[in-house]
Length: 370
Ligand code: SF4
Image 1 (cartoon, rainbow, N blue to C red):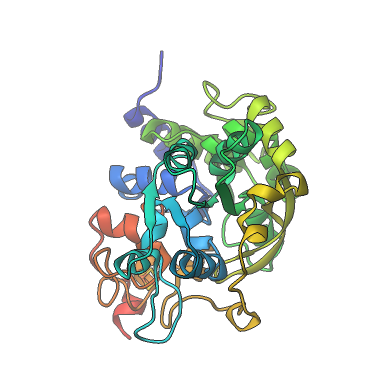
Image 2: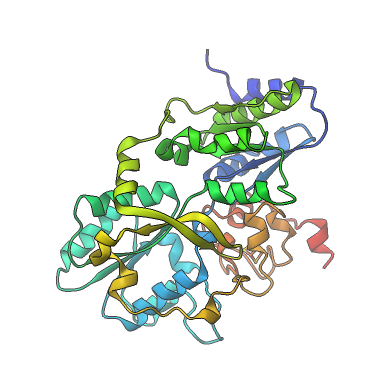
């Protein structure tokens, strides 16, 4: 008989926890489910849930957003992007266009889309005009983009690819002096595409309990129980708590498309810096659809700085799980979903926006004191 949320909570409360336990949840979808269901308040006081680097909009490097804005403003193209990307701000002098939304207001042809299929439709509807698809996202987003190219995209459609792999960010945290967590809840959707095996390094190399969860509170509680029980019983394993969807080896078709169309490269993460082997780039045989090769680069070295967040914005530390969103001094004051300062308040997968949307209005004592 399936176990309900109340029963999982009872089991968690019955565990003789050794003291404070910090569980990182990587995925923005997990954070949304946890926050909206109020799971933090229902868990034992010893359990801390830490949102991690699972928001693709938040980590998309500033130079890529800037490049998309400049292409939209200066090239005779239509720029298509997922809706969240339109409001992401870049650092430019006051009065300059700082987001795709502002570029559109300034007359650029910028279209929000929901899927690669929309980009294909858009390109087919205007065959004489180039369409650049600004594709920022993790494995789950990059795989359909790869499929679109593998199956044959319209000749006037190119991709400004800003794809990232999630596990290298977690590996970077674990290899640092202070990872900041004792157990991991791995993302279900990414594991569906890439296979659960991708997360085994957490257990095998770092000796931390790990469990893969789906997106319901029940699945998340099952994964939390699994990792906590492993800690209590001093066992370690990668537990697949989303077996109805996550299969060994992942999705072979999606992986084949990724392998055919992309290669893995070192890549910049906004506010974090370059993480080795953490990005997707198009293979040379897709050069005719690579917007980085088809159009001028508006990049400059001065834009490739480590601290790429707007002044005062602590998104980098929020993304790395070093602080909670309401520990940022701007949270709820200068920065709200209506007037976002940083990318974590823009995206539906950003921890700041999720916390605000779930009703967290009070700032942490450390932030309130400043
Ligand atoms: S509250 Fe706003 S300024 Fe602060 S970290 Fe979040 S997005 Fe950045």
